[in-house]
Amino acid sequence: MSRPTQKHLFITIVTLALTVLFLAGCSKTTEESKNTTGSRKLYVYNWSYYTPDSVIESFEKEYDVDVVLDYFASNEEMFAKLMASGNTGYDIVFPSGDYVSIMKNLDMLEKIDVTKMPNMQYITELSLSKATYDPKMEYSVPYYMGASGIAVNKTMVKEYEKTWNIFADTKLADRMVMMDDMREVLGDALSYLGYSVNTTDAKQLEEARKLVNDQWKPNLVKFDAEGFAKAFASGEYWVSHGYAEAIFEEIPEEQWGNVDFFLPLDGGPMYIDSMCIPKGARNYDLALEFINYIHKPENYAQFLDRFHFPASVNLAAEEFTTTTPFYTVEMLENYELKDDLGASLEMYNKAWETIRYVD
Image 1 (cartoon, rainbow, N blue to C red):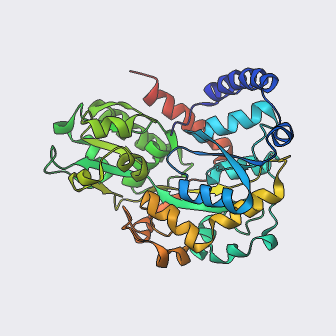
Image 2: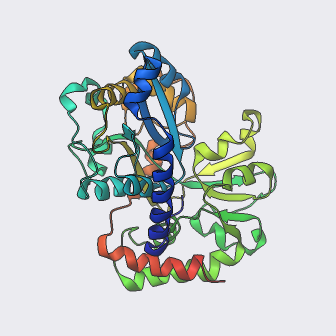
């Protein structure tokens, strides 16, 4: 999931602003849609490969509501769209932890009334302890806590190092891909070197930059934020950095045994994606109902089963699951949540520019 520089983010915001303004003139508001169709609508903006259809359908039936889903591929895309429009009409959005912090500080989120959501009792202490940006769930409710890892095509690759340094293996040159994501790639390198993924030490960051640029990048086909899963499934890549749910979504289940997906013991960046209510959301109470419904253990188990996730956020759901997760909660122990770096983000942007935008 790509994280462009401040310059690129500004360009994206301007472009999306023009698009949103155009679409606003062509579309109906939530209230207009309700009056026209006679049915309530809940507008949800979530990541791709991340929404359990069965839970959405049962919520729609139980609450007599139409859930309208839009998808984004990166936090930047979601953030830029909300920034450009001021109010896009969404009732629930799913930012990662660092963007919850940013959006909270910019007064872009409504406070959440947890007293109206009894299923919050099932949120794990582990996820709340990691959610240092909002540990009391004042503005966000954890949706899922996980990490990116590495997928290896075992039919093509027989011997390999199960660390981030697999990308230094020249024997696999031109058959590997890493995500087009600044914090993920630099965080992987920092973790492999024994440093924090949130370091503000310029020397440590430079060491990580050189590792990526000099030893990993020469062996990569490219950095790819959106196509890594399809290309891995097609055999173009033999080793792919990415998210398990995206990788296995593209591969027939009978072929899953040909894939070794692992989280390197080196540690690395982890994420908590949360459910938030944007400022000015028209359907605040219904949004609370939706968040509470998601975390009913029987419902959340359907989410875990759909994407073969471990019960990192809602442990009570585990007794209702029927599938084996692609990785375990224990594998996340060495992983570190990506913090909002504030002014130090520019140091990362400059390092990333020399990797991503210089041949």
